Length: 192
Length: 293
Image (cartoon, rainbow over all chains, first blue to last red; front, side, top):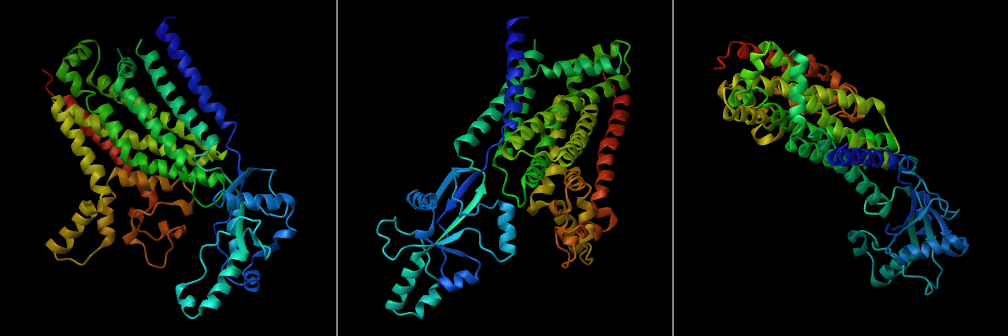
């Protein structure tokens, strides 16, 4: 076998391995936490809307840790399956859709302590529609903001890691390399 | 030499082409990348993969004719201009052997390119979603192979009729423009031209079914409709919006049934069969009568 054949065969084998092996190791889903969403209504209304309200003090140590880390990391935090908190539900996309259809909101609303100075600031950004705000005076507006900031919505779900994450990029790189190997290997073997 | 020998020799020669392998690599990279970025469809993993192959067919609808035309337009015209046709016909080969051999070989090359894309897309889909909806994957593959073959037939027919390389190139470009481009961009679409002729020039009342029927002569639109035959009803591509009554939702099975028979998805098979067979018959007849001196 000449050198051209050897390299061509090696590249074809490499392509087969790179195509087949990652397919047996699909990207594992992760448990995602998002605090970017805003629960605008007062607590009683939120419960009517299907939100589950949990006081921060009643969260498990893991639950508190996940909430704080999510706030500290810009409102988005992922952990591997099995490392979530028991009190949070982690629905898949399909389950989330079904929950919306049933009038239930995925995730929880966390009632922060009155003195939340030990916690990162809440990232509730929207305090209601501008039309509704026009009807309120300054004191009422401030009260409303305090309520919205105290009741911090956190969405939790099971989902794929983002496309830019390392496990995803490794698999993309493997597929692209497999295509190149197959093409170059095929050419070397065909053009001898 | 027989038909098979001609096909084998032609296939071997084409396999040595750097350009064809480069095209296959580019197609494979595109497929892998599309498979990687897809995944926002509603539903579970199998739905994500079905949606991916739906997107892939939309892409192939535009790219595959280019590949098939480029791979086939010089099949016979190149031999004629380069003098190779005399060698081919000096051995105990008939023109039919040469024509059919070239047809088989060029179809094999295009099928190889399609397979390359599918392998890349399937691998990434399995890696990302861990699902393999075989019906949709193999169904779209089969329809795509037929679609590729229609453009091979067209290109080979033109290559048989063209006495020179430049005419064959002009024919390939013209075919792509007439059979694909005119159906992709809405501003200069065949449907709009038919509407203008019908309403402005002839002064008739608008008839969307008629304009859609005129458009349905394109293998490009026939391919898009044929893909619907292997997709679930809620993933169907609606091609002829103007023929659908307002009270029909696009995702329902009725979106196909309410159309006139000649606009339904099943009719796409007739259109594809036409483009698969008629150009070959015409091309072969022209090749048989051509003066190759």
